[in-house]
Image (cartoon, rainbow, N blue to C red; front, side, top):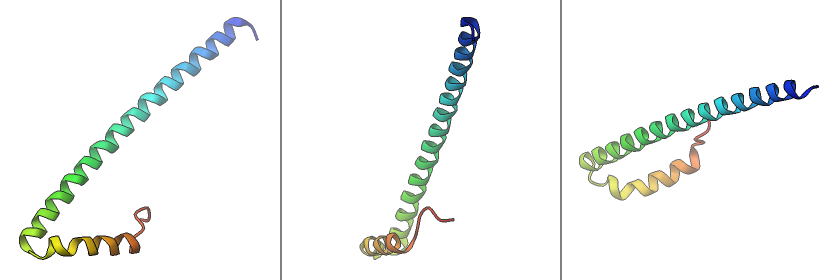
Length: 76
């Protein structure tokens, strides 16, 4: 291969890598937004449950420990 063809291939690879990096950054930002939304929803639910069920704050650590043991967060 001559130098011109190699340079064109290198330029094409650099563009592909740049686009892939931008897509990864976009996906990461979307995941962070979703995580923030879930954190807010969880905080709202805990606040509600504490208001409706006064013993919730006391029982929550036990409920959480049991849930961690019983639920696989990666399963659908």
